Image (tube, rainbow, N blue to C red; front, top):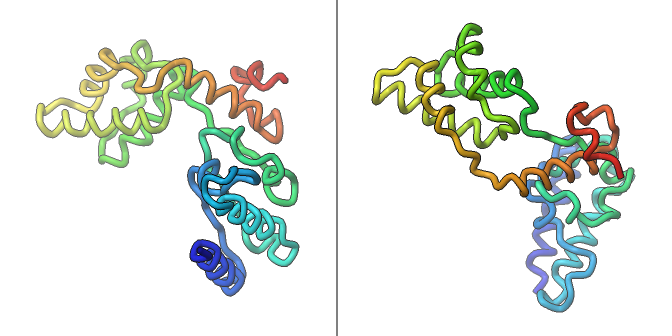
Length: 203
């Protein structure tokens, strides 16, 4: 009892000592605790939530400690954590919305594996680039293309074409649709939402 809270206090003291820093919290909907988590954890989740909420809203560190939260389920983050003063800007991240964006994403991730997709490759690939391509799926494709170029002596363009012709999305379409809608609805400003996804932001 008290170990988690003690560790949090140590983290907060470290942040204050650093003076200026970024704090990145992944899977924020699971990590930050809940205001009312019931009695299943003896109130630990609620205490963690209260401590973090207080620290995020502290005027002492405003503009010095920048909190960055990432989540695929922003709707599950407690509403008062998302108020101005704690989270001032909510930036949605979307899958690609057309072959041009898909090609740009694949091209960028291919560079991580020292693969080059020339401009001319777009004409070859545009008909097979899937809609709503996520960064994780694109990275997996880039790695497979890298492997194909090494084991089968294919060019990067040929490897991607073969992979994309047989591509199946690893994310259930209904789940992807839900995540797109949540991202659009949670955006602080409509200008952060591409035109294609703006209908999903209407409340």
